[in-house]
Image 1 (cartoon, one colour):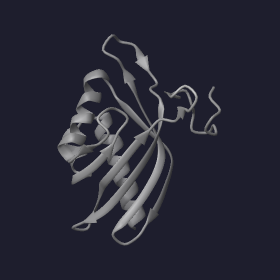
Image 2 (image 1 turned 180 degrees about the horizontal axis):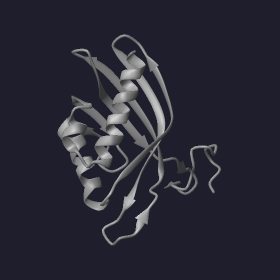
Image 3 (image 1 turned 180 degrees about the vertical axis):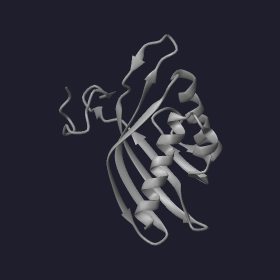
Length: 148
C-alpha cells in the first residue's frame, strides 16, 4: 500500500508538471524539502525554492511533458527511497520542440501525517571526467559511459 501511494505521488509530480500546476506540485513536497537540482545553486531549500525551479521550467517550455523510466523504490514505515530516470521535454518559446535530456533522479520520501511527501530530491547529469563536461546524450537503456 505504501509503495502504491508513493508511485501515485510520483504520478502527481508528472501531472503537475504537464499541467503547469504549482499548487498540485506543492502538495507533493515536504515544506522543508531539500533539492539538489541540475541548475545552480548547489541546493534549493524549502518548498518555495523547489516551486521556483518548476516555475522557471514553465517559462521556457510552453507544454512541458515529464517522463519517468525504471522507477525503483525501497519503502519502510516512515521513510522511502526511490530512483529513476526522468526527462522534461516540450516546446521552446520560439516554437522548437525539444526532447530534453535524461537525468538521474533520486527521491527520498517521508511519511508526514499519513501522507508520503518528497523530503529530498536530486537530479544529476553524468559527466566526462576528462573534459569536466556534462554528458547529455545518454539514454536510460545505455550503460554510463556509452553515449550515442
